Length: 510
Image 1 (cartoon, rainbow, N blue to C red):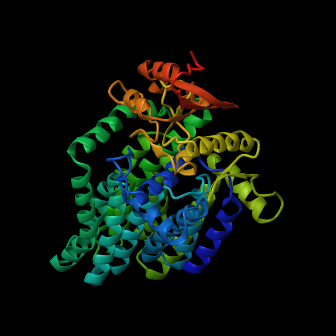
Image 2: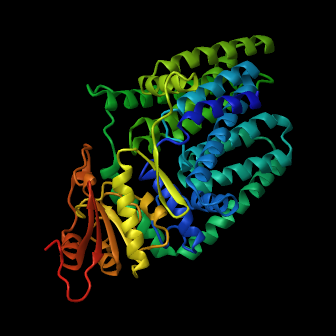
């Protein structure tokens, strides 16, 4: 079964392997590991709202397999595989092989709208589900070795996304309760390396920097949030909101069913359904932080795969449980295919797999051995900018800031340019521009600009269209620094390359 699901996942993701990249999310998945290899420390030298695990792991992959977008995307595929196998492993415990196979296909389908890259949330959810699968499969006969492996995987979730680890604690408690002190000790032993690594990381970063990151996360929240309104007329608001309501309702119903069935003699499957329900409910705050499909799917997946496990709780016969579980999983697959957010990505994937439609068009923009996939029509503009930036580096420029055209706004930025131009050192803590953080009144961006030799600014991000606080202006001082102290080198499309004005020259922007 594992080999079948692995083959299906490869078939599903291969047509989009070279698709144009996400300039922000995939951009920092590429740029941060390069900084780590150069000696920088996440949270101390650059800001990220995630744990340090993803930059560390991708940096390790770069060190072994070479620094490239292909390496990063292969790792992203492995993250997905871990998640899919975790789903299948959980369902197999309670409902058998066929139900597990259907559930694995559901997971593959549910992930199709996500661009293939090494996404920390997918890795963290995969670690959480794999932890539940291992502890559930071991059951009453759980060996200390199995518990330790579960702890090791839980540690992966801790390093990738500490909030996911917090959501995983109640499911782990349900699965380990009454299993004995040895198994709990083994689980904690498996978790220990990640806890020690995170503690050492926090010590290196220091309380001041960690507090700054925490304050930026809180400040940026209202500017990243999307409306939660199941009754909205706009489909892009209504469907994710309804999916979240549906997921919460499923999780609550499954949790109630599990708790009611736990008194049955010799019935231990209730723990699996309860663990999945608790994981889904624990991840609801993450989904509410930005109610779109990408965030809601992390709640939807554990809630969905709980359906075949919970369905078996009402069936006394072991053989009947297998039939009921498989039927529930097959029905679940049909339900997933009816989700509008999935229909177009799945249709395109099927057409490309069958050869009825070509893979997405892309062009690689390159600087030396590093390259990044972009839309073909954007490639000449971007290549011109990075080529000119590289020439400026060869002429003595050493530091770079990548931002929006209007630095009062910090909705998003082209983080991938830090990866392409990795020989230039970032001059700012804010490699990624999060609204009300990078453009906050105390961000220090003005001082960072005074240390920068080059700027690459993109006016395409000057007017955020989301219904949140990302449209609020920050201080005007950064724009004044740009106007007074930087000269235009190249303007192409919405991009501008600027260099600090040399003595005797005046700003081209005055």
